[in-house]
Length: 330
Image (cartoon, rainbow, N blue to C red; front, top):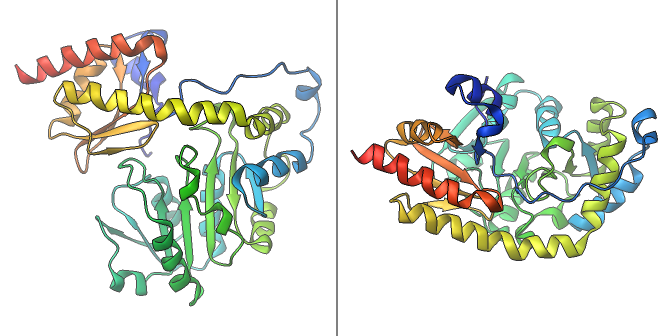
């Protein structure tokens, strides 16, 4: 089992604190979720409709021609490794580990690199996996660099797979408009920016024939009717999106400032989370948990990821940080 943020039920049992008495900042999910519209009972009684409306909304939102809706981008990343014979795969050592898990499980050889991708590794790689911006470090790869890597890989039948789960506040850096080319896959998600992880709606952007192949593997009715309706509305609501693109960077900056005030200066992050390298990260996570605050721990390198708290919970987070850092320092 891989560790993830959001494992709050297990955490509540471990620490003996009721589930409702936790502040969960472990996920990087927007706490100001897109408002849920009224839903008619018929949506729950019928098989989900064909996803044409959802696909049209996604194409407009992402600025791409070819898209496939799936039950979260997780569903897509698990299918992609099955489309190739065992090959050589490269990815950053510090990145969302479900990618490595899926490719290793399908029999591929995964190599990890630290900060920079060197030319030798790229030349000997069939598939390059990246999160952009990276989860959890927040590193953002320049578009021209990514397109250059894709060109090198595609020239020999290789792939570039880019997970853009945290891209929505910085759409100018997305490769979505370049998707449709052979050997380029882009993963997008409704869970983070829209705060709708429970809908299980994600998208795979790619070359049309390859998307058809993935669709056949996923099977019918992958997205529920209620999820399709809510997702379509969220993707089309430009006013709400612009409001979030203005608010989230300010809130993330506020979070970075709060952490810095307690000696936890972030080394990276996005508009939805901050990443803190700390030699006593596990002890810090436990100290915060005793205050009812749950964070995402990373063992190598030692680090914590802090998502944005709900508007009313900033004082609680500040108090927990005071108590936890005081405990560590004494």
